[in-house]
Length: 93
Image 1 (tube, rainbow, N blue to C red):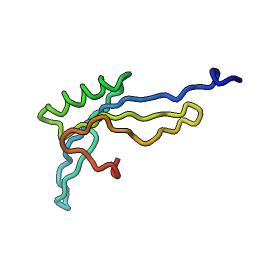
Image 2: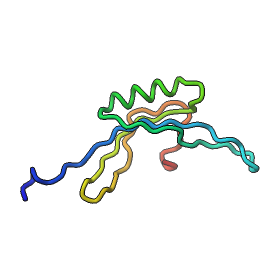
Image 3: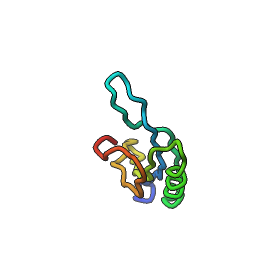
Image 4: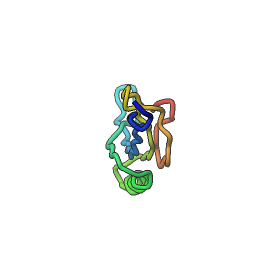
């Protein structure tokens, strides 16, 4: 098998939006994922995040990319393209 026969890594461009969760009995609010959209380019994901972040029911939006190893199915750490509004800390991602 030659190098050209090897499956190439796959790049996923994601727009992910967040909403604020209601305060529970502990009176703390949080964030949860509302929507996820996958695009074929970084600019499409960024544009969608910018549009979504402007909507009244959206607390914040991320556009990011991840690289998938087709052999193992493992996905690497996200590389953020843009982060808008109220978004989780990277450690919470």
